[in-house]
Amino acid sequence: MFLNVDTLRQALTSWCENGQCRLAAEMPSLAVSPFHGTAHLGQAHTDTFGKFLTDARAVEGDNEYYNYPGLETAMRNAGHLHDEPDHEPPLEAIS
Image 1 (cartoon, one colour):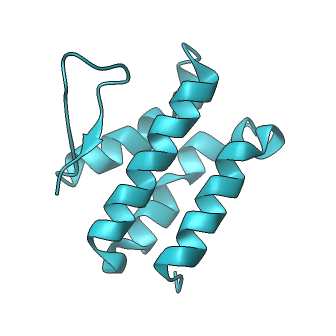
Image 2 (cartoon, helix red, strand yellow):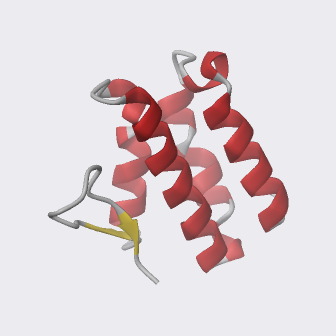
């Protein structure tokens, strides 16, 4: 993917804010592809996807599927997330 940080940030913010987009059937699994495709953006990429994940979970609450578990797994497998036991959701991007 050929996105810069600002375009990625705008796209993920719009995605999260638009309920029809955020709640479309395949969107949670589709979020993994742009995560991998924008890894060249470095820490800004990690921070942007971490914010998206946190914001989506704040909106969706306990809706397990629309809490984007595939994205969390991809971020965790890439070493970008760690647990914070005192916070919900227990996610923070690792610097």
